[in-house]
Length: 167
Image 1: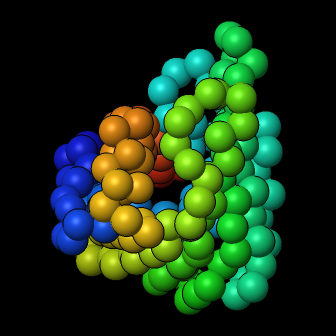
Image 2: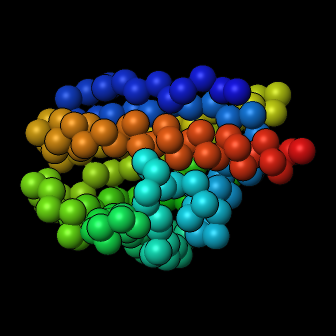
């Protein structure tokens, strides 16, 4: 089982999440770019599902993700445009926050710039996700939501999916 995601703050506006998967790079890439796979793992804490996962993975293509709490029906999401697609090594996009009905005080404002880099060695893929925010305040606000804990919960589900596929 790979170690949990490592979270670093490379600058006062950035968050970097690094995580290894016991899976080929193409599988990890597909899990991040195919809606039918994303809705199975990118769910954060228990009790949420992802009723909207629309993605046109090409430069200039758009995406919209929306999560819904199964208990109270509250929703939030993200949307943006792909700025770089280099399968299966890298994908980058801008990311706007849609507070939906969760009632968060996080401003929609300027987008974060998100890049995902994947490198494979001996069947182990290292994911490096860098999120660059418009300001230190925006970065700190995003981190304070427990975002990286939610990412790790999703990555643990992804580990299980890869194990099942390998079995």
